[in-house]
Length: 82
Image (cartoon, rainbow, N blue to C red; front, side, top):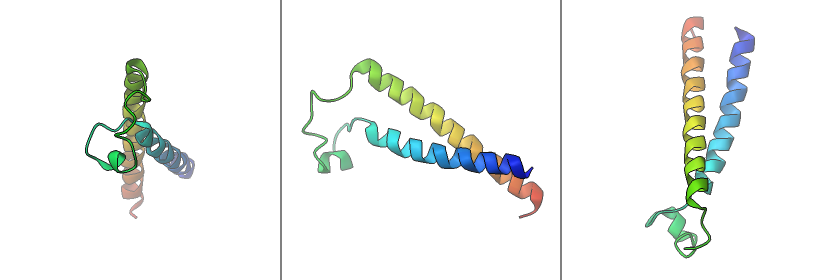
């Protein structure tokens, strides 16, 4: 059980970092924090449609893996009585 917990913690750490990076890569779509830092100025420098869709898909899959890791760690903690 300790090995599984360690693996899940490593997966959680890696997915957290990757999710942060992927979310920052997304194109700003108006009025948010991305416009404060010049995101609204770049109209033609954004990703293509296909690249943006693939980025969205990869972000969703990674978010699901992050969620599963958190739920699994919570269940392990509950079973151990922590």
